[in-house]
Amino acid sequence: MIIIKIKGGLGNQMFQYAFGWILAKKYNEDLLLDTSVYGEKKINGIAKREFGLEIFNNDYLLASETDINSFLELSLIQQIRKKIGLNFRKIYNDRVFKYNPSALQLPPPIYLNGYFQSYRYFKGRESAVRNLFNFDIKNIDQSNLEFMQDMEHSSSVAIHVRRGDYVENEKTKSFHGGCSLEYYKRSISYIKDRIINPKLFFFSDDIEWVRKNFNVGLSSVFVEHNQGSDSWKDMLLISNCKHQIIANSSFSWWGAWLNDNPEKIVVAPARWLAKKEIDMNDLIPSTWVRL
Image (cartoon, rainbow, N blue to C red):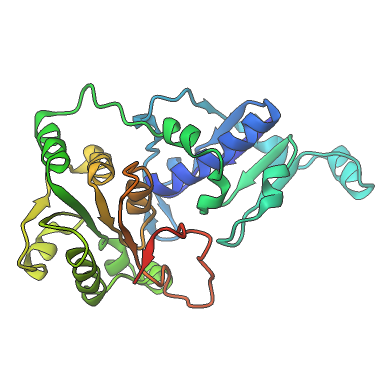
């Protein structure tokens, strides 16, 4: 049995599920999802997110309370087995944002807790991971289909501007920080020097702020209709653009990574987190540009 704790927003959930799925495939084991965190109203003072992986056409097995407690509440027998070095149900906590190759060798039974935010876990498995997160566009509404057609027939560049809790919540702001206007200006200039007639598609959780602050003299579209339960469609649209300028956000990271254009330019912030001491080099693929 392999259980992975699913937490955070959609982008975080995708990293966690992909890692758990890879490990489960390696050992031919069932992957069970611990989604219990989504039953809480707030987590560390932050309004809870929703379980979002249901937008993908995967069969998910949810861990029961008994399954979870079999790891988290060690019985007396399990404690004795642990002390004398015999096999027992293990818990693996991924505490740092770095690729750990030994994590891919963890044998079941195991409970996984972490973010697993590194493209290196997907090395050699890129096609399989992309298939996991293949958007079903059969029921996509007409407005999004029209955007997709526009992106296909233009030199489309997705620009994701993350604000929301990165601006409003002091704890989140002190940890994540945010991307400055200067970063976006440099990124747009970089794209402009390399792409003929770029068309910019802006995505944000504060699109009015973006309208007021991004007058860049290029053809620009401000995508604002995918709200609430439809917000995942922004990731679909981001991935359909030919190039991306991303925020320090796993949401736009996945939008860029899922873009299968072999000639894509992806610009990412040089500093991913506000805390300089946290090394995030294993997050950004070497083919992406960091500004």
